Every structure is written in structure tokens, then in C-alpha cells.
Length: 141
Image (cartoon, rainbow, N blue to C red):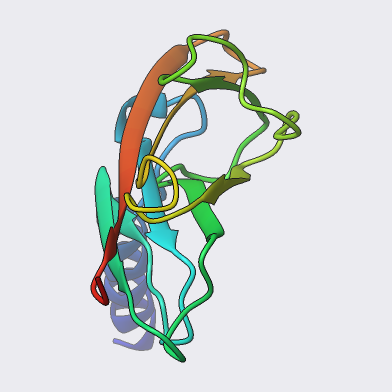
């Protein structure tokens, strides 16, 4: 009887392991570009579009827009950043999962930052390009 219970328990454990299998490296389809505009609040990443409003003593102007590739399973990835406003590479972003760019409100600059990241799984060669836009509005003037 004891052996039968052990066999049932082992079978149950194996079934549970299969039903909770981790995402496989190389699946770049789940990648998303998320962002936030840095203010004095507790800023959180938002997928695809992020918005903030400047008012005195609540944020700096200019500030930074933080972009980060999210949604990827553990793996070996390369990143290539593009500035969608200028059509060139994003300055100083390098081969990292995140990138910060300067942003000023629409009254002090353009109030917008648009980036894209080409994410490459270095083990499989799979590539996905993701993009996001950050908006920074002037809530004072």
C-alpha cells in the first residue's frame, strides 16, 4: 500500500511540473517596451505608452523618460535601440535592457520621446522589435 501511495504522489508531482513549465528562452514574442517619465511620485512602468504631467515641486523639467524591455523569459538577449523621432540610434543606450533619454514638457521642448528596441535571442537568433512613446505635459502654464 505504501508503494502505491508513493507512485501516485510521484505521478502527481510529475504532472504538476509539466503544468507549470517555465517559458522557454528564445520566445521573444512576449517582449514589450514599457516606460515611465521620472517624477517625484512612485513611477511605474507602463507598456507601450506612458504619460506624466509637470507641476512645480512634483517633478523636474527636464527629466528622464525611462524605457525598459519587459516580458522576456530568462535567456541570453541582445538589444539595439533606435530613436524613432530622429531615425537614428538612441544615444548612450548600448546593449542593455533599459534606456534613459532626456524629456522636457511640450512648453520647454517637444514633450515626447519615442524609442524602439530590437531584441535578439542570442542563442536562437529570434528577433522582435518593440516600441513605446513617453509624453510629458506641462500642468502649470
